[in-house]
Length: 408
Image (cartoon, rainbow, N blue to C red; front, side, top):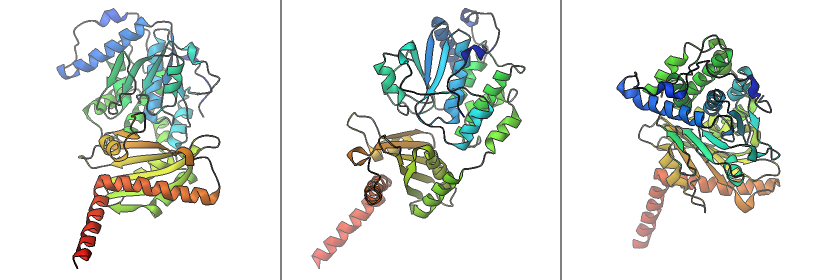
């Protein structure tokens, strides 16, 4: 279980190298294709050097995944070399079994956001594996006057926030980018340092998780994994990967199977109301539906309920179709809110969406909840089917049938 606060006094720098950032302002010795990665690694190190002694907050998504957790840890350890105190904070819940195992077994210190937390103590905010759209901390930090300093992500550009250092790349995982920062800077990993071993294990798990066990990995991901291999604790990694699914996750998968509709190789399933604590069951159900024969895209969604808070529709998309861009698919299918922010977005082969329920939220009366689900289930399905083209075809057929009837 995540601990309350990072004990930064226990975090050692990534090495005892005495050289300052100026010492590596030389021509890179890496092959030509790696020079951009080398340059970016030097840039973030130099930026951290300029902010020595400050206190920063790493904002990760509300429901942290292995990529966010590992990348946040990597940034924390890099920053420690420059005496920068870093808290890794999330404003949500960790429910996925592998994520809980990752945090517990690797002793990763995360801080769950509490309204009593004084955000004014931070001189800068860092966004890893997100661009402010999937964390509830973005607005809170803005209100507190904490400016973004670093954005590192592998998703498509969202455009919600800007930062002096922004590194957005089409790679399999944000962990791949942070592995390059380690590899191409003086502060490399050491085999006899237990913290470095835990970090390497976390980064390796993140890369494997984001790339489907390296099946969808790109060249940069393979290179990063190759570098990490010499430092990984393989027995700990095996324990994390072999964690069993909970009963609640199995129940949600069962509902998804029973409720799914299949159209043109798309599998779409609404799973009804899901507890806030079980939110991670939705992407796991989408992963499962994608394994069905002749299915190239699976979309699962449900209404997340948390006592005393707003209700939202949460959905996940998984696809093996190389010509389908999850980011553009969900953005065009679901549109924007009144503020101009898209309800959905994604990355290569995966995406997600979040749609507020609005004034219909709040009531837990059974009949009302049943009616409410029918309305929203029908609305989401219609928008997705229209995007696929099925609903449009059906509407055209109905029009043609009516015309034939009129002609008769």
